Image (cartoon, rainbow, N blue to C red; front, side, top):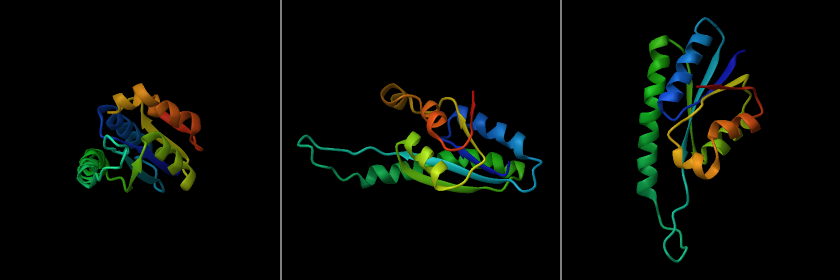
Length: 142
């Protein structure tokens, strides 16, 4: 395998997935790694169902995403593994699945649980949805 995708939200479980991936690809010379973080964005509406500007919320989520990705890429920097970072906006499972369609990956690695407790209650587990619908093999790390 050569092209890997790690979906991360900076949670303990996604950091475990990153460490697992490091052990897996450390000795591979031609491995390509993409680290993906999805800013969980939802429309914000006022009482009259009129969209409310949420630029300040988006600024917060982008800053937050940089921090979350930072904890993950720090592990790859320490291990001497090259990577590229992608940050997408939207629903995590949908964006991760779309990323597997937009590019060619040999393996997607994702943690079994992330920060998205509300997402799991409302929409179902991100890792479950991704495992069912991604167009490449998926490794879910507990």
